[in-house]
Structure formats: C-alpha cells, structure tokens
Length: 287
Image 1 (cartoon, helix red, strand yellow):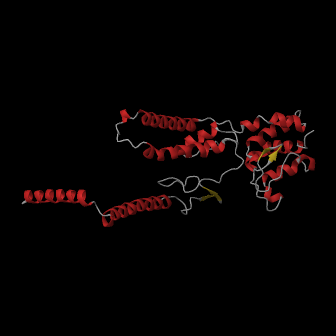
Image 2 (image 1 turned 180 degrees about the horizontal axis):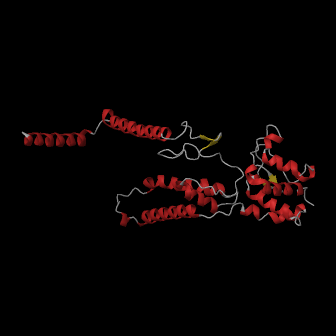
Image 3 (image 1 turned 90 degrees about the vertical axis):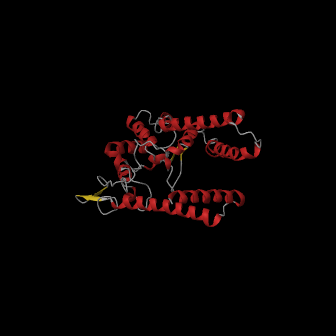
C-alpha cells in the first residue's frame, strides 16, 4: 500500500511538472499565495522583534528610568538593546560620525571628492553612472555566450567593481578623523586678521570654536554656514557684551535670548566656555 502511494505521488509530480512546462504556472493563486505567506511571515517577525524590544526594557517601557529624581537611560537595556540613548550633545568634540556600514563606500567617496565643486560628482554622479551601466549590460551584451571565462570584459569589470567597493568600504570603516582639521588650520589666519594672535586664551577659544560644531550655524571670516538665522560672529566682540554675558549665553542661549534655537553648550565646562567667550570678545573685525 505504501509503495502504491509513493508511485502515485511520483506520477502526480511528473504530471505537474509536465503541465507547468507546457502551460506555465498561473500567477493566481500560486505565486500570489506564496508571496502573501512570505510577506505575512516577514511582518510577523518584525512585529515580534519590536514587541520584545519594547516590553523587555526596564522602567516604564519608554527607555527612561528615574534615579533620585533624575531621568536617565542608564541600565535600561532590554533583550534587544535600549529604546533610547541619552540626548545628543551638540557641543561634543570627541564624537566621530560614521554612516551605516553599507554606506561606508559612499562615505569614503566624500573623502576623495571633498571639494564643494566635486561633491555632487562623487556622491551622485559616479554611483548613478555605475547603476545605469549595470542596468544597460543585458541590453548591450546580447551574445548567447554566458561562460565566465569567455567574457573577459564583463568579468574584469565585475571584479574591479567588487574590489573597489570592498576597498572603499574598508577604508571608510577604518578612516581616521581629525575633527575640524580644515577649520583648525584657519585659526592662525583668524588670529592674524582679527588681531588676537598675542592673546593665548582667545587663540585657544578659536580652536574650540573650530571643532565644537559652532560653524554648522555661524559664519566667521567667510567660513562656516548660516543656518537657523544664526548671526555672523566675525565682529561679535565689537558689541562689547562682556565675558560674563558670552559665558551665560553659551550655557543656556534660550535663557538669555528668549526663543533662541541655539542648543546649550554647558557640557563644555566653565573653563572651555570662558575660552570661547575670550575668543568671541576678541573678534572685533579684521584689522
């Protein structure tokens, strides 16, 4: 009996393969059913992981716990990690940003094409050209030959692309950053033009200013960017606001200037804030 069932199943399978080869396999319901089942499985796994991530986190399931009245994320890791990290510090000078690993090659392209005029070429132009060439290959090479050793151009091109992307991914992952190195190189020029080259505190403050992210929003002697309505600071010292004002403003900008979108730099510490204030007060315009 078991042998008869086996023979029957084999005959059915051969008939099925013969029918598929002759007539094809209809999209509905076969392919549609398979795709629907797989999609539901993927969504189910994502929902399960999200649920485990959230409900295994200690505290009130927000990723934040209170220690002596102070909110903190310390010790709040669940099975799959933290829900939230501590708020970002805009004044940090020790953090080196890195993209996700699959963008390391693009990150390294930015280091090669670092001049403003060539950034578009390096980040959009070259990847787009490579993708278009990849799409065009089946239309350009219509030969019946598909043996790899008989297609030297395609094989060499493929190997070079894989090697170059692998090398750029590695170099992007291991790249060493000299934070604010380009801006640090401008500090002596600033000191000379603004006339504070003999003021060591102002020079030290200028170096902090170059690496602390201030120039993401402020312009100084033509360098930097003007964002969120931030004023140019080339002649900040000409307003004679005073060291105390500058320190308090850096600690809590919105406390001194209501509605200011500038983030607080209190994490820099009193000593560094004083150096920054010395630099700002010494910046009275080119001499």
